[in-house]
Length: 343
Image 1 (cartoon, one colour):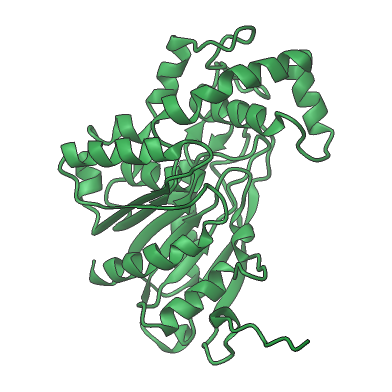
Image 2 (cartoon, helix red, strand yellow):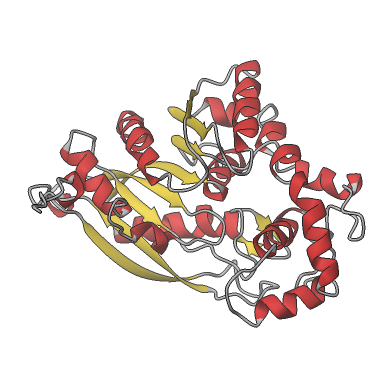
């Protein structure tokens, strides 16, 4: 039997390769965070081929999803090239060159949602007020910034644009958290049951903190606890000092707490923050029609809300689930790069 070599553009040696840089940044705003997470973080920066010999370029913050870091974007598989390899190929095919910045905003509860919270830390300030100036000191940048991400990273892209008007000129949200009633509430009852079986939040957290793989409903519980840390921290700064959005026995929504969550929902926020969104050169919004977390509901609802607010945006649906979606950057990033060059 004869096997023919697999043709893959990601392995094309004729594609000029960019350079990856690992920087270490010590944060001031994360000092004293309630989870005792590290204040010294690595940040990976991609510069395209020829960067050292050319002019200043725009930059794009690439935000990882829940339980991920920027470094995860550099993993390579048989059919899943790393982000830098993917962008090398996009630029070789004609996309304008840009610098990519991949931060580490991981927390002990899986993520930060890129928001400021007393229960996790000031991650919005970390990214927008500390990291952007830090990277700008080390690389020759034009001052035009974009932000893009998947899942929680997509949520973070929208949130940062609205939290820091004028800081970003382009944004791409891939399957981002939106319409919290549909993407989060279905997890509340199963999470409550799993926590009860573990002897309460403290019991579940002790077992989870001991290490090992996620089992059973662990991801569901972690998602609810992690989002509670981001959206509904309680007074004080103790570990897991949060208000849960559901009754811990029945799993039924607690309206007064869930209202605090909804204040972060892009669907709720986009109307009052329409001016920040309208100022973008490009807003890219998309989701798969088979998304595991029902985020197509959020994408469609947000799309309609943006239309109602007269916010210009690109909306796209595709036949796909929530996972293995890195290939979708082939669609959004060339448009983001072009918008930043025109900003």
